[in-house]
Structures are given as C-alpha cells and as structure tokens.
Length: 534
Image (cartoon, rainbow, N blue to C red; front, side, top):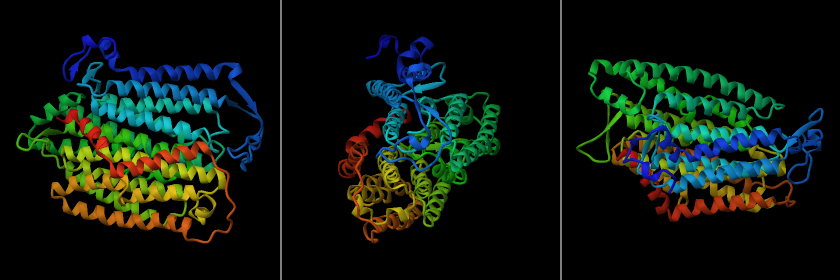
C-alpha cells in the first residue's frame, strides 16, 4: 500500500492536497521522467552527430530514400527510449498497485481516482509503452530528434491520465487542450515531409474550432448551474424545470463538439484521414488508440456523472436529466459514424488512410454502448476499447513493418505478401478478421457485447445498422487479404526479418486469439472498473 494510506477516507471522499499525492503517483512519475528527459537531452555528451539523413541506416541496413540537405544531430536513442520505457513501466506498475480502489476525489474535486480512471490509465501507459518500442525500429522515427519525440509521448500520456480522471469542466478543458496541442506537434513531426506538415496544420485548425465551440458550451453550463463540478452540475440540473432544457441541450451539443473531435466521430472527423496519412505511422497508431480512449473516458464520466441519474426502478440503468434526449442523439451519431467510415473506406487505396476511416467506423460501434444508458453498455465499451487496442495496433505494426522493408503503404504494395513475408501476411489476416468481427477472434466477442447491450434496450434499428456495416467492412478488409494471398507476386524473394517486430506481432496476435476464446478475465476487469456508476 502507498504511504499516507491511514489518512485516506471512504468512497469518493474529498482529500486534501497533501493526501491527494498518495494517489497521484502515476502522474508524478511521468512528470519526473519528463523533466529527466529534458535534462539528459541538454547534456553535451548525450548527443551523437550524424550525417545527412541519407547516411542514417534503416533498420534493415539500407539507406533511406528521402534526401536531407546538411548535417544534423540526433539523440542517443537507446538512452532516451530506455528512460521513457522505465518511466512508463513505473507509472504502469503504480496504477496496477492501486487497483482496485474505493475511489477518492483529489485536489478539491478537480480529479478522481477510481477503478474507472485506473482502467484507462493502464490503457494509456501500455499503449504509449508499445509505441515507444515500435518507434525503436521505425524508419520514420530514426532520423528525427528523439529527445523531443519521447518527451512529447510522456507529456501526452500525462495529459490523457488527467483527461480520464477529470471531474471538473475546467480540468476537462485543460487536459483536452494539453492532449490536443501535443498531438498537433506529433502529427507534424516529420517536418521535411509535406504531408506531415499539412496534417499538422489541418489538425490544428479543426482542433482550434472544436476547442472554441466546447469552451462556449462549458460557459453555458456554468451560467445555467453556477458550477463546473460534475456532481454539482448534476444536482443543479436535477432541480431545473423543463423550460431550461433547451438551453442545456444547446450546451450539451456544443460540448459534444469537443468530445467528438477527440474521438473522431461524425461530423467532427474531418481531420482524421489526413492526419493519419501524414503523421509518422507509429504516431498514427497511437492516435487511433490513446487520445481516442481518453476522449471516451472523459465523455463517459461527464455524461453519466453530470447529465444522468441512476434509475431507482431498474438498477444498472440511467435516466437523462432535464428532459435531454442525448442518448437518442448519440445513437444517431453512432449509426452515421460507422456508416460513413465504412463507405468511404471502400474506395481507399492507401492502407493508412483506409485504417483511418476504419477507425472512424469503429468509433461508431463503440458509441452503440454509450447510447443505451446502461452499465452493460459501458462495460461493453471498455471491453471493446482494450480489444481494439490490441488488434488495431497489430494491424498498424504490420503496416510499419512492410513500410520499413518494402517502402510501400499502398494496398498494391501488399500483392503477394504471403510469398515474401508469410508470417506478416498471416498476422495481418488475423488482425483484419478480428476488426471485422469474425469468430473466434477478440473483435467478435467485443462486438457481441456491444450488440447485446443495444438489443437488450430494444434499439433494434441500431443493431441492424451495425450488423450491415460489419458486412461492408468485410469487403475492404478482404481486398487486403486478397492482395496478400491470392494476387500473383511479382517478386518472391524473402525479405529480412526484424526480430523485435516479429515478437511484438506474435504477442498481439496471440492476445487477439486468446480473448476470442477466453475473454472472462478482461470482462471482469471491465466490470470492476464501473465502480463510479454504482
């Protein structure tokens, strides 16, 4: 147990600033290692002078084909990556040691530490850890300044943890801005690449608009309730009359702009395809998992703690406050999001862009669980987020692997991959079938729980739309599988292997299969994380 344990109070009891430090260890660890990375990056001996980018080897020993004029310096990547991994590992360990917890408010109810927050902190730390490991052999990351790169990854992990724990609208906005600003920098990290710079600019413009709309919604809520605390907003709205429902509805719709932008739901998804295609592929994989999960965490906590009340007649179900119809609004957004994402993905030839639209479609699936106002729906969301992390990261890892070795991100570049890289082709097939929702893989189990939650609440139309969209997704995933296994290979020379990526892909593939046949531990973990809803 952590120090000061005897000072801690009962369930969701407010702690003093000093007591709060006992449950703020993950954030403190990340902050400490962030400062350490800055200091190491300033030490003269920690920088190795490299030649032009054309002299920097790829992971397979070849030279990059992108020219870079002039000499540059690059950090000692092993030292910096090692420090980053140690910091993330310690933060992850501190989170695991706190689980399960009774739940506490920290720093004058600005943030909460409960099983729900800890669930997402594990996702954030684990996803960033894996991205750092992937970056070690990424052809796109090797030539860049890595001190800043790893510092930004630690900083955005810290921001996501605050985002998932926030119980005050001021903290929600601050954490959202931290995540967003760092995301702008990471998306444009390949400064000499036009697509990367364009992606960062578009991301920044869309993000600025969404941020402005969201802060206006927050100001309306504050004007209507006189508070920014979730629990106090809930109490104030519960006492208001129907005539004020319109003003509250407008505020909620404006708030959705901020959350929708972060999770890339329609109509706030416009940034995603360009950013996913232009950003370094490890960062694209990270954007599809980490910030998106943070957006879902903050949205769930806000809508359930501030805009809903638990039903006294039906335990495990909730009722929207102030005559708000946001559950139906979210169901419509869910249907439109999954439909648009899948339909546009049908015509994509660039694999990163295809996975971007696929990611938008999966946001629609996840929102199915959000719209039913039941504990079962939220539990299905949490389960699917973990499963999605595994299978989507696996698919992106194959994209990075192929890009490193063959230099292609187009579907045409995967022609005959089963002959040249059979292990990768089989792994990609597993990940794509899981993303489609084919048994006995983890994606099928995740979708099953989401569909079950929707059907239980008699939203049959939403379940039918979700099922039809899954069929549509099978078509464009099958295009990739056809190219890998059925199309004639122009060259059948075996490609050199990368042991680090081979091992990581094997682990992710094993988990994808394992959670498809033995999902109960993950399901129980998701169920225990719903403590703040009970």
